Length: 360
Image (cartoon, rainbow, N blue to C red; front, side, top):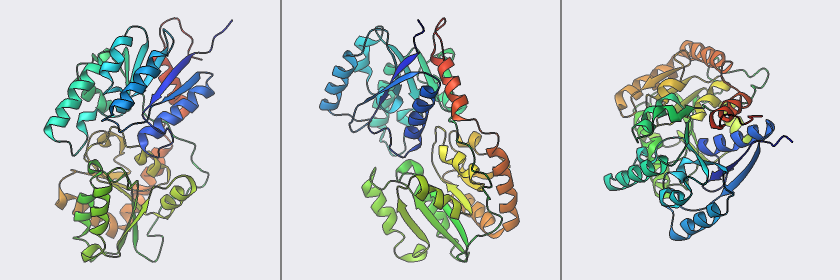
């Protein structure tokens, strides 16, 4: 009798949270199920990656209840700080760590917190039989934590089919100048402040910036960012939309002329693929995996903290409609080469399957 391959996906919180990491986890689970896998979700709520005692107690109880030999695919946001919880089950369960980017590389951490996360994640990853990362650049980051490279596999995010006839911008598509779009949670790593600082020097040009992303992850930062655009040179030029999903998010992409992302680090940056699929030119920081995920024919890469370089790149793409046309064409061509979720699920299944097991 054939037994379907199975795994448990350990998720730190709501799997439907609209960020790249959670979208990856959710779409991977859906695509594995479509391949015949039995995928159950083990949700553990908490203030990750700084879980309280109650969260850790729940994790211990839930993990202890998993059957021997179970394959547990654990999102790195939780796995990286569950070293003491995982240790008693290191040999009883088969652990696969899914690392979007190492925890200690998050922007805004003080030295002590960064070191604590680095030490805990190093210990936790030693218990993983396999580590899956979402970009080639993250391989080096994980290897630096002591994981042998032969235990690391790269499975980049997949994409959905492109809507037929998706246009892509040929010129500014409204009477309000060039519409810039940034889709990123308002946290220090996404570097909205740097983007705003660069744009504050371009008020003589005709542009509007639309920011989509959660304002609750770092509410104090979000309030400061929003307040900085109420008065002064950016007044009336920046619009804050909060989290958007599905049709509302698609509408913002459709209304945009240029996609911008000033992150200080990205383990992949799935919004780049979304921008490519909507035929948008990209201006992004040369940080982490973005150096590989932004095709040169579709965008411009800028050092994350170089305000002058950002200002120059933004001015160029705002003023030069011909450049936007060329980059938009490059984005549409690059989108056609993006992998599907079905194909990436097959790669993931092969990466975590032991010899002799069926991958479905």
